[in-house]
Image: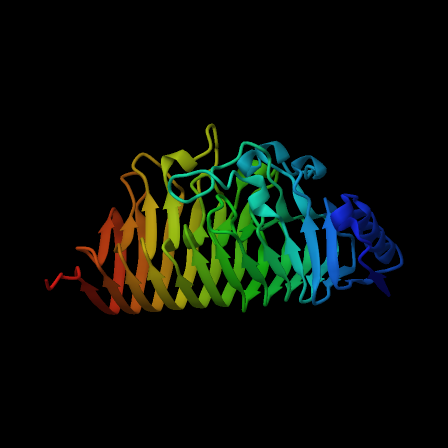
Length: 389
């Protein structure tokens, strides 16, 4: 079935009628067996919405789902097996949520807009970044324990916190999605794929202040074992002030069998970052990351920091970091590629194949506490520009 939702003028008069109308349409569509909820052109003021089984939320060209600027308007995400009290950024608030539902989609050429800068002090002087607010900021999308999920064509703009947080979901497709956020905002990640399996991300553009694409297995928010596996990412363009791709944190559980290919990363941030400092390890955690069998191929990286960084701070004992391959890369960066374990966590079986690496520092590749670092057809250039005056 198909249900049309028309702009009822909530923006401008401060009402929440759009939330009620859209939620009613989603509920009715699901109750009648499923179908498409079509949101026509217009601006729709909304707080928290819940996806239901067998519903496609279609945002037509010119449709904008506009998140409220009041954090008190948003629900806290609560679900069995999800430990909301351990949420990162001390917030479980969301604009579009889904809990243990199947066959859902958000499609169309429209926009989901989180009004992000309204949650920050945009007048703060200093580095140019907005001061991190103390209030709980909502994410645009939080889906947990869902199956057969699709995002296609829509734009996600100015999320106050992480844009998409997908948790313990299965069979997920993200295609031709655009994620953009004011790069002066802090913690406005692009797509966080957390403890999910069988995920494809393709033909997407992401430009954020924080990480663009993230693979995690965050154990502290799940009662079940956290495993992120069988993820492919291809044909994407990333621009981040922080890093284009982040994989894992020291308190995560298992991340394995993931492939990234045909990626362009630009920006002042790092390219690919597998970063494990002590401060990221949750106090009292009994889980340490087990990361293996990850492949990266056909990358172009222009980075103001590290193009590739695998790092474990001294004193951290992780279960495993191994079997990571980088093939067919063209890199221009300030800092070198870094592969650095520690006495308690030796990084193993890292391969560099067919790579051209240019850095402006004194090194092109540095490594420490590693075993079996393999290089095949790797061309290195490291130099500083000389002032000819």
